[in-house]
Image (cartoon, rainbow, N blue to C red; front, side, top):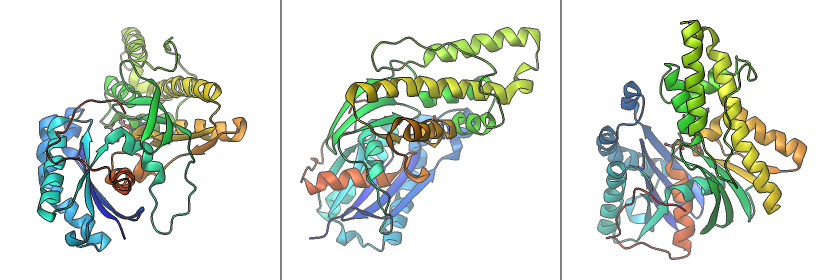
Length: 339
Ligand code: KG4
């Protein structure tokens, strides 16, 4: 019997809906929220209000684009957490309401597991290879930096993670300190392409094991600029591209040093990249370099599945629905968790 799932994602500032049938993606709709740009970061209350405006048209469009009637759905999958509580509640309430009214089961998805399983999202004509288990996944976003050992869709172990800021957060803060826009990651990426990555050096953390830390780098950058601005008030404007390139290089080196070590320690050479920061040009290049020179097989998903999206939630939900792993309708959303 065919398994058709509508998935809903609303954990942060993107409202997403996607339809997957028997493991193949039929539609994937995302409504982003420009309202946060002028505040330099996501404003939770504005995010949940925007989700309320977007959720019905986004879900409706996903169903129409897939050519699926609500009555054909087998289950509703939804991101139950982690994320911003006000944002999650909109998607979770919508998904529960729909499951209840259609008399079909609800499937809960952990947002971070969704990011990892983005590597298995396939459209009907898509022949990209998928990772085989076990593989390592570097999950780097605005809220997370983790190295995950993936044994199966429902078995993931975190080998290391940030003890303070996430990599994306560090890039966003670097852009903010330089007076650039939000989100800063793509702006730093663009500027860095015109700069010298070795122009400046910033402090790198000495953290044990496979954990990360990015708060020291941010402070080092801030103090460096403070000192330079005393000498030359136009320093940032004059050296913007070099600053972006040097900061980006440091972030990528920090990420890759620990990942190299994880590959050495586990002996697993299939390595996947996930999360919003995986759009970064230098990080992608570092992955491809490992593939060319260290014998890794790397998996980098298309841009549409790297930032927050419902396609990855649909894929994760599909695996759970196959296993009849359903969720009671009274299970609440959660803001924080580990995989
Ligand atoms: O996974 P994601 O969409 O969601 C959250 O974690 O909220 O990741 C967003 C993060 C932001 O920090 C953003 O600056 C970063 O991904 N990002 C990038 C690039 N595109 C997005 N960072 C570096 N280079 C990029 N091209």
